[in-house]
Image (cartoon, rainbow over all chains, first blue to last red; front, side, top):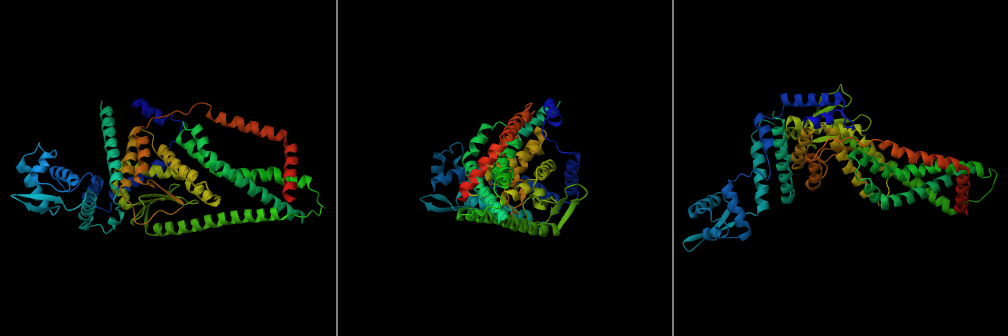
Length: 182
Length: 313
């Protein structure tokens, strides 16, 4: 690693930035750090915000929805048979009920049980979730900037591509930190 | 009359060469780039820009170095030779092409200046004593914009900067500085001036190569490369309401799918030494061409005069 850095700084052969440019960058970063337009919480939330990575749903709720979308509609038993057999019947039932109360699922009674169907498609839900998260983030903040203008909901494919890339970068950064430790 | 005839013929030769070279480059640029695909990103970007500008430069060079001297030296000054309609039409086409180029470049530059001036009016200058001032803009503008040709500046939107960590912010700014150092906005202006049909793919390839070259120049270690990759990913998820002006560059200028290649390249960053003697390889054929042209100059002038005679008749 050290070898790589020495090469990069010294004899990379490519133009390296003059000190003045790096100095300006550092000044900007320092200025921005000490005079942010946003509260610390907003900055933190912004940085960790991911459109597809942090939905306002629990992992089990997400899993149920993921199973329900291709089926269109299903009862608890059908869901268990469709790949959720590692979960208890009651767990699935209460989670579905919670999703129904969150108005994410519709249900019709079928004998003694209910048949659930998603109210929104995957894409619709993702867009709604992203919009809601941003409203929460900026709606009550001190900043008066029209930050909601910044948001552009990516297509599902693009979001997945970016998620994969983000994971790759994070993994590489973790490796680098590990290598740097003596 | 002699001078007018000279001007018309020069313009005719210029536009004919320009059209022929443009067609040639539009057909052959992919092959030329593929031959040298192992070269560093900066050289690829330079090669693509050189190819894009080659029709204009080469046709102007041939006209100035061969057409004009051949006319002045070999054309009888007192002749009453009639000028056909073909040179007149070609000269008008030449005038129109370049006048249109100037108009398009001037209009785009005026628009860009207006947009940037509006952004800067409400911006806060962070650093003015450096060569390139950096502004914080509290409007919904693209996260990072390097704008201006004569007096370049970097504009950073508050919201865009808030998305990034300190190290990401630093590398993103260095990316914009790289665009300014490479005078990419001036290059865009030149492209706008020398418009020619069928060459849009080459321009697009240059734009992408320029981004990659700026990425390369902005990072000097793997840690910085990963910071820049992370900044790219974060900013690709968001977009401002108003788009960047034409003569400006930004960190993210393309959809998420094409960010993929840049990020993967940054993740695989390795320090590179340039191969020794790379410059010499280019200089030798250029020198040989100049020597050959000098040795056959008089013959070439005669040949050029024959071409103009053929054009007139």
